[in-house]
Amino acid sequence: MLPKNIPADISIEQLLSYFKKGSLKVSLKGLHKRNVYNDIIDIEEKKDGTLHVGVGRNSLYNALPEYMFHPIDRFNNLPQLEEKERFAEEYEKQEQEKERAYRFFAPIDILLLLLKAETREQLRAYTDSNKILTNIILDNQHQLTEEQLKNRFIRQAIPFLIYCKYIRGNKTLLTLFLRKVFMDEGLKIEIHEKETENNDSSPRYADGLNGQLNECYIGNIYDETVKTYDIHYWPEECDGHFLQIVQDVDLFRRFVEDYFLSVEEALQFNITDDTTTLMLSDDMELNFLNYNTNI
Image (cartoon, rainbow, N blue to C red; front, side, top):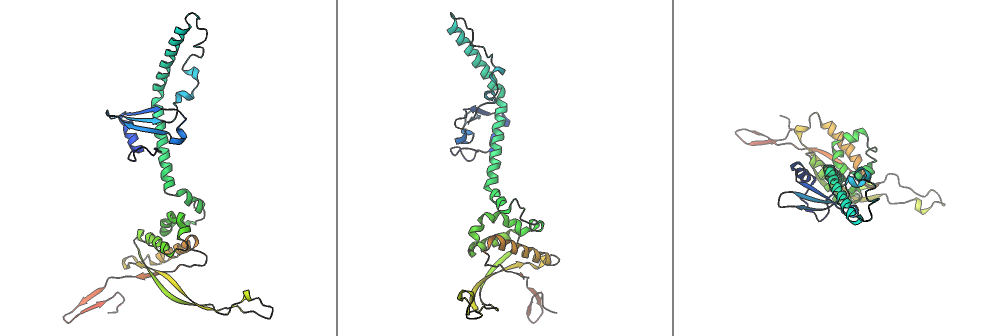
């Protein structure tokens, strides 16, 4: 993952392109900034076309035992009379050995950088698509049946699951959500509002003097505005697939009711046939007939 001060147009693909050209240089700056800057601290493109990347970690050289590269008794038993000069000589030798070790591990350190950058970019893409929350809601899709997983409308709706708490109870968001799902499947929906009169055929009355008032009611007729959705299904697609479409839409309706509606609400879809007008002409007039007209 690139830090915020790095230009947004630098990606793992560009890092790979510099690497393939042999112009990717890595400067290892230790572990102290790693957690803050997510591995990459700074990036600078030089005039010679090389890309210098500052990394907040150490080399593999720093993780391996010292005796693999340097004598462990190098500074022991130095002659007292020449201690200062010999110490400087041995120190210079150790620095040269360290430099050679860094050069030896440089290709591996660069590969580790690319691997970390690609892993973080894939992780960011995974979290940006909200798959983690979706998998939590669906228990890694174990809550869906095989039939639901195959349903094309449900597959389109799964990415919206993380917004279910906002859609639930909001008819505007519900309409936009449904329109998006059906539009992606090549279908158009229209919303209709109509006043309906609901009649409870089994009102409850207190049966006896000891009946509680909260256990009964008298009025059993009330008006309510109901929204229904018409799905326009074009006639050229309706032949052998119409019954399957009806089943798919009904399965999708139950899925939406489970995740996007409150327990008091129900969803209704009406599938309508839209056809092109059939025109028959004669010498006298034009007759406009639809596909149900008997000739």
